[in-house]
Length: 479
Ligand code: CA
Image 1 (cartoon, protein in one colour):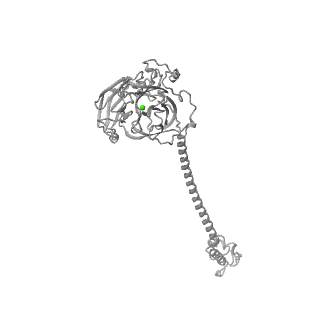
Image 2 (cartoon, helix red, strand yellow):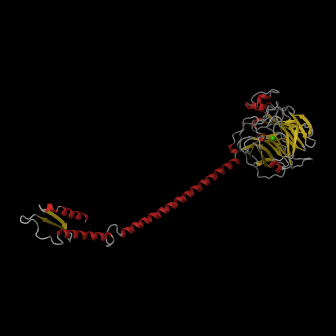
């Protein structure tokens, strides 16, 4: 239609030219057929004598064209319903297809979310299984243990002076030559520190524990988790020794807790706390100044006396708490001291005193034993050695030791968070054996471990953290 209007306007504009020459018009009639109209100039007349009648061919063509367009517009706007592409029927189909697609998309989205939840659940399950595997592995490690050399780990001998222990030290040691066993960090001594680094012995394999409960003495079957009582405030509390008297006597009761910070070269202060609560809060009720300085972390309390090694000597002192004076002194025969036979931690831990159900013990070594642990039962009054055993356990290969029910136990590592009690030596039989009771150094620097027979706990000092461990005694499963 627009085209026809343009044609008409063009015809009007060119009317003057059309008067001079022939012209052709083409248009549709009412029936839609094409209609042609010729106009030629008359040789006798300048123009048509009469105007063209209304509704001439051009107008008729326009009308026909308009009619066609009207029909088309009516169809497009829904005036007819049959067979027109894009009509309502087609739109309905499209809408239905769209609804189906949207529904399927929702289903897929839901399925995706379900699968994601399943993946998360599987990941949690895998983590649980991993933890369970680790736990079982720590409880059933015997299959992981490498074969043991017969002498270094599995064989311990009573004191006999046997030369088979010569393999326990790598260099010969002469009397008084304490430096031959020192390591390069020896220079710490000049700075007032007793600490001495050494190799860490890792024995990751514990053994099955007994299900037998104990009502009295027995073998160590398990050690509990460390229980924290106090975190020390200053560098002086990095390592030390803390104690309770298992057979306390007046004026101090069994609740009294005692502590010595052993960082430094002139260690002489003994702090007393009324009970564990005051100890945990850090409020001492008593501070005693010892007449002679303390060496290392091996001190212990028994029957109202503090027993400790005098600094730079093999002398054992008994300090009476009631009179606040030295009540006895005696050299521990042939004992190495001041770094000659320390534990793997070092720290001048040459002489380690402890108390169990059977009395007062000293753990140390001698040149004769060539670095193997010597165990002596002491008279608590006079400090005389009642009896000694040579265990065959190389002292600087273990982190610490403690006595329970007449048995010596050693800990493999002072830094490994998951280590073991790795040797047990029974003084009753004079026999030792390798064991693997799990033990945790939670703070990774355990400088003191001792048993308290009244509490039936291990007391320990682990890297500024003062902790205790419950122990279970009983009858281990037969291997
Ligand atoms: Ca100890």
